[in-house]
Image (cartoon, helix red, strand yellow):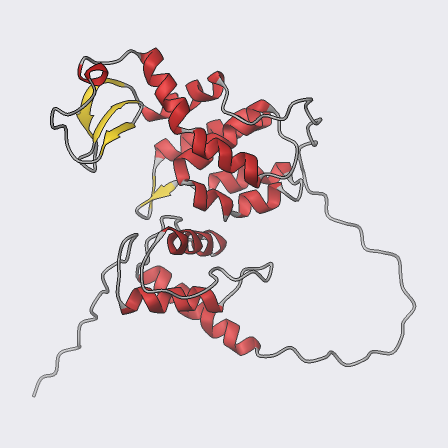
Length: 277
């Protein structure tokens, strides 16, 4: 009798909005492990793939060098299971055995880490995206003066401004039905980016120049405010490690598991704006 090797069944990837026992299991796993700083990725498990769970998953992916796309696929499932096993193997910490006292030797030299100098605190710290920062973001969003349906089939205009959910149906404001100028589109873009600007203002605890603030707003506007707040980039920046921003920005260059040259160029431009180079 001839036996065939059983075929492996690939699990359906989970995304924002997914529900079910696999979502609950993933959430419980993220709630049971911590990052390198001892912080849990998630406070508690849940059965709905919401924005908090996606943010925790993106943070885990970034820490493990995976594509930061917020999608729970086969690769992420294996990495997460391995992390849970590693957490269990740690077990409770026991007191280290006492060692006989030794004479301290000369301290080892600290490694030299290139960092940007801390910018001087401005008289009025930046709190909103500048016009130059809005124009910077506009370079990567693309302008369309007439109403159109975006990739998700939602009515949109200008630099990706959402007019309403669902396709064009004739209920749009007369201003938009007639088409808008680039100047008006930039005004709408600045309004749309206000939430990202507020997130940067709340989250960053170190001094920033206006250009640095604008670069971070561009990044948060692109990846999402939750992902920005939970990012290693923000943690290192708040430790005054300005130079670490370059490498951390470069990690966010994938979508759907693939490196996109458009995102590579955007991250490079954001670092150039941030560093003043």
